[in-house]
Length: 508
Figure 1 (spheres, rainbow, N blue to C red):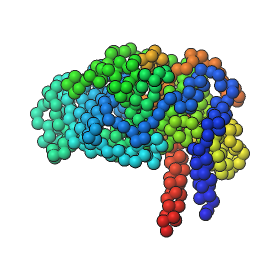
Figure 2: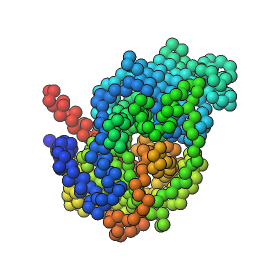
Figure 3: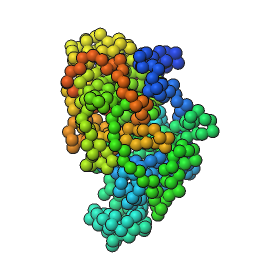
Figure 4: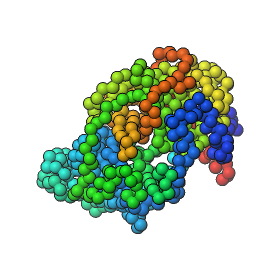
């Protein structure tokens, strides 16, 4: 067995070891992750609540039967503004409504897609832990336009690309066929339409506010490629915003009730809301264990200092989908520009972010072994990494092992909302699906990640914020963490190849 195979075996054993941690060792790891200086703050309390399970249970295999609806106006890459209403039946068929809008508050419907088909659950996902793979088969895709202008524009557009299928100008409030099994044509491709989101599913149950009488069920479906032209070929590796079960939803969700009662001829019209000015101040934390493409689980904690336009970010990475077994943490800080209203995404605000400092803390044996393999000044002091001990990687221009590169600037998109309980939510731009970074203005996101919730209006500096403050910015590959998806893909591909080679040896 060569040195590279040995390293992979050590890494795999380390991950196996991490996945079997008992409650006590997991708790100690979390204490190391958060540190004692911030242990009692409200923000850290909220994060620890997530890591202690947050009363969430996951159904494996998931039971998706029922009616599932959006909880708000959703934003897809493009941008596209929509709400969703999906019904899954006991005979494995489904009917999905996708309602599209002109505005970012979903008050002006333009058209609705009605999708019917069959869904078959497969095995637990090998790529995304906690997810279930599925395959679907479409029976029919139909469209209803809601204004005369939209009907005219879409019929003209589809007539050019789907000749013979569109006969004469369309009328509003009339249902038209885009695709069917026996129709002999497919006009849905012109809209970059695909239902590949059904290839990855996850159902979570949670009792809100520790109330056993208030069950909320959420359905997570696969993510949508950030480049619309690639949607037809993309297999999900993360999730979209969750849908909630219409019978077991958050009682404060007004949008859920409106969408539940809607159909293709009566699209949901959500209550009008004013756009909130994005104020980057105070502290914000994840509301759940977040999933990123290519097997990355994490929680985030942002601190914004609006008096001098500096920011801090704590990124806690884990090996499991409930964020109980830490692998490494990243601390970053830097500067951000004044916000400008986005000219591409209604309701969004553009920022430019830079980083001038970063530290890394390995939290398990596998990551520590990986960091100690690299020679020279490629990731902190050579062969000096220890579990739970933080190192500054600014002086080595980042960390090759984790794909961190210095320097870099990123062009960000933010928006702010209030949820049904009056809490402020902060959304930042969805990362490109191809693993690149938004290092040019034209690569700025047109959709958003899972929102952070404000945990404190104060931006009092943490103990981490003190120290040298150079002006070298950092390459921000994933949520400003500097994690390069390509690097992780190479590690994961190598691990898969290693296991396949073992399998072949056993079979022979």
